[in-house]
Amino acid sequence: MDKTLDAIIKKYNEDKTRLMDILIDTQDAFGFIREEAADQIAETLDISRVDLEQTISFYHFFSQQSRGKYTIYLNDSAVAFMHGRREVAKTFEKEAGCKFGQVSEDGQIGLFNTSCIGMNDQEPAAIINGVVFTRLTPFRVKEIVKDIRDGVKVEDMFQASYGDGNNCSDLIKAVVNNHIMKKGPILSSDNSSGEAIKKVISINPQDVIEEVKLSNIRGRGGAGFPTGLKWDFCRKSKGETRYVFCNADEGEPGTFKDRVILTERPRLLFEGMVIAGYAIEASEGILYLRYEYKYLQKFLESILEEMRYKHLIGKNIGGKEGFNFEIRIQFGAGAYVCGEESALIESAEGKRGEPRDRPPFPVEKGYLGQPTIVNNVETLCAIVKVVIKGGEWYKSFGTIESTGTKLLSVSGDCRFPGVYEVEWGFSVIDILEMVGGEQVQAVQVGGPSGSCIGPNEFERILGYEDLSTGGSMIIINNRRDLLKEIVLNFTNFFIEESCGSCTPCRTLPILMKDKLIKIIEGKGVMQDLMDIERWSGIMKANRCGLGHTALNPILSTLKNFRHLYLNKIQREVEFDTGFRLDEAVKVGKLITNRN
Image 1 (cartoon, rainbow, N blue to C red):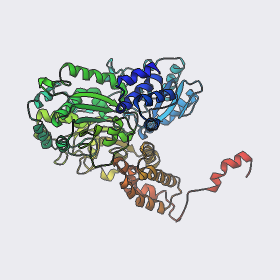
Image 2 (cartoon, rainbow, N blue to C red):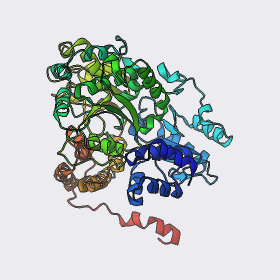
Image 3 (tube, rainbow, N blue to C red):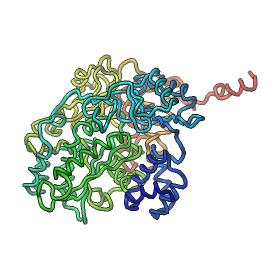
Image 4 (tube, helix red, strand yellow):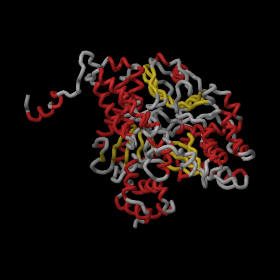
């Protein structure tokens, strides 16, 4: 029995529901999860190897083979390609002597593609042994690989100063920048930590919920469910205990606002979790944080420790006898689908992050079968402001249906990428003027699962009654091939990130990708467009909302940019398989010297 691994397992009390933590710590300790380690974990936790293997294989950042002494994950989002990702990747391959998906012969360097790492405002970006590198260039890549060959520690490879704000603190030391471009009630620092907690403990928990209902705040993760109603359902559900989850698994390409809040306003977030715990009478809060933000762990843990010292979390919070609420951090391991609340809960229980069948909903039976609320980072921060200043004050911002403010992650073809806090009700053209978007062909609102709109819709407003968004806005100018550079990239993302549980989500995006490539190559016919539209309805049979929207990159652009598809269609041809015999045998002819 390996003593290091034994200590890791005992650290989590041999609890199988903490399997994610055990696997993450094991990978951190050994570089990958060896066969012997897997055997020991399965035996000690009394779980089958099949159950263990299916959890390990589900997550992008787990591996059962070495991925090199220096493991490099390069973001492959559309925005990264906009800013030179292709040249950066080629340089990595040339300097490392291996292709992406491989490890160099000397075992030093592993090159791997990864989905958006929350750095779209400073691309191209990569994670090397857990350390984030931003604004990469071919020259910078050569420097990094040279440092690797010289045995330099990753932390000592930085050539630039640390980022702004808390990024330069001793507990983070990251070259990441916040790029806070516009502040509002959430991003401002106009209240002291603990102010809202002191206020809520003097009133009845149900009264807290009523104030949240009065504010009409809706979930900021994208679905927009009324927060007060969710809390009320949970508080009235029967259970031995209740849980508060903060969903910080922002995996949608183009989204990075939560990263900024976690870096600059973590006390606000944790205070929101405490308020939620008081309102629903919960005993524990869990911050489910995407693995890509693990570089923030020491900093966030220090904030939690500070709040314990000040009696803002822990036992008898704020001096109120019997109000006990603890918060811990649970990391994911690379799976976009874990942004869906039931998949997030499954992951936190140590399983594959597959969405659950509903009902029952998490507010009835969530984490460990107990009533659970899952709220977005931004939502919980806004709750603190609602408690301090009141629901009526909050309703003074935004529109009737969409109250309050919204944090936007803006990236792509614009002069000022970053985080903007605006009131609901701003038009898209207002945003474009603010961020310096010029010669704009399209705006992707709400990430790949949202809507891609053209100039004729730029007067539309951001709000649940019109253009709803979880926060991502990607600006695309006229130089881009929208279908090839953006839509195909987003479609590949959904294929890669599908949990594979539902047949439509497992198969249709691949079939649609084939159709898309066929059209891009000039081999498409009108029947292909008809097939795309006719087949798309089948996606509603998927279990979760993420599965429902997996075809949106194609469907949204087919609706709003139909002319791009029609321009590539063979109008005079009724049927074309896309297969070309001369292309298929081209390589064979060269090898055999035949004409």
